[in-house]
Length: 334
Image (cartoon, rainbow, N blue to C red):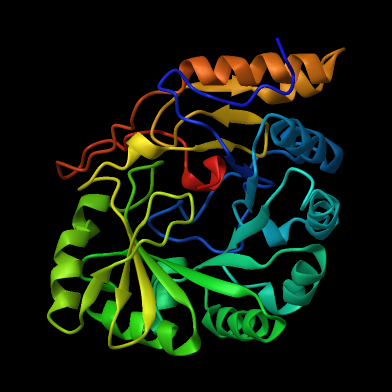
């Protein structure tokens, strides 16, 4: 086995994108993501900074060129910026892009440090611009901090894309306003269908909103021209003629996007999930803590290529049904 061999799965898809969770902890409690009384992992179970770094280097050696740091909320981890700086040294040396997904609550503090470390583009999760609705959705009154963080990111020169989960009877009516505001700020927006991951207090069926309905509503207001823009993710993009901005749609339920999948996800405990919508996994923490970590990690990655499924099997069909998977999005890392 060559340690430099690229990661290619059994369906001949080249894996070049890693989403690495650095923590399962979050300072928000989004109702569709986790319960209010969420039980987080013991810190001893989470990969150390050195392990996260070594694991990332192992992926880069096997052809991963894009690395996204996720959570939970990655910026609540105290040594997070140290990791970003360490990984930033690989930019131009196998790594083409280093980025992260954040809820924005701590961006005002860290935006300039992220740019200094080599980050040029970030995703910020934001489902509403209404303070009362934000509080309802996240169970925290943190919208002012998020807006301050977005302003800081813009001032620091970061390119921002907002990720917005479309929720029936919650933020549904506000989506056009949010898209228009974001485009006015120079931010792209990607709309996402709610995903059935983990037990939460509410029934997701009540707020499931097909993006086909959202797109139809937006097209009554604006001209949406299909875009050739690609980021390596599952979104389909449109250029909005009237706003001059870009709109992405991620439709795991109404339109499967798996044929071009180029990514893997690793949890903060080192569990590699070959598919966001599957239970196929490989224990990378055991490999990292073995007597010969480099060899064990390579072998584990080869196993991941053999078990990566052709597609996910998300579905929201019936009120009251169990989630597709028991783990929460905050654990998998998005």
